[in-house]
Image 1 (cartoon, helix red, strand yellow):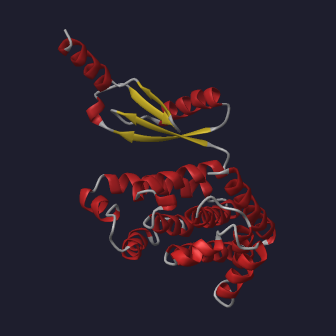
Image 2: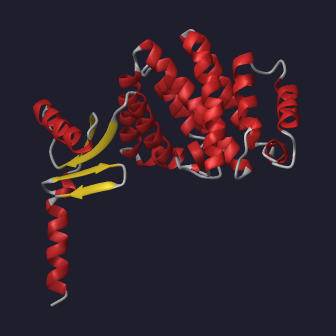
Image 3: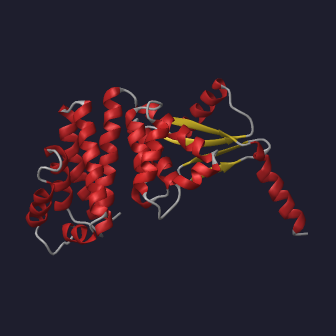
Length: 273
């Protein structure tokens, strides 16, 4: 994202944080929901998002336009956040949409922070992703590009309602629309990492051949925390296909010490002789 885009998001974030500081969890939930609604509205209105991100138009003109459109449609808090966003400068109309969506996610994660449920939300999103990965039919449905995202979101709500934190349900449903243009699986992973970041943690995706016990997971998390200089949460997946060893990914960093990798390297070396 361009420097101007980052500055524009910061302006919207400052408005959101000022509201969130004195808002109840219910009020912040409403704001987050409405910001998601505005995001979907902008996605469906290409001419409007171009007008709202047009640097040739005065900031007051852009703000006036969006406030007239949102009047009586969303609350004052969501309207103020969107107004702050459209007053900024954006590299493209889609960047404005992504900025609105990003702040919607931050608002909902802020609810988790207020309620002390962020860690649970993070874990529930991760576990739901693993559940979808383990069901080929469900995975195909939820990752199907070109199908109605609203229908897929309704399916996610039916699957998770009453089984996960309400914020986790909302975020998982939002993933069906593709957070920042990502796939459903990519969106879920992004949301897991965003929830961790809201707790000032990084996420380590760990693949092992057999389950880690609680002690082993704690030791691994402690070692990774020393490496990165910040708390690191471990999200473990069991995959017998790796045979043994461990694979760890933190952001773009990947350590692959699996037996399957070493066997592949040995086969390639033998084939090259």
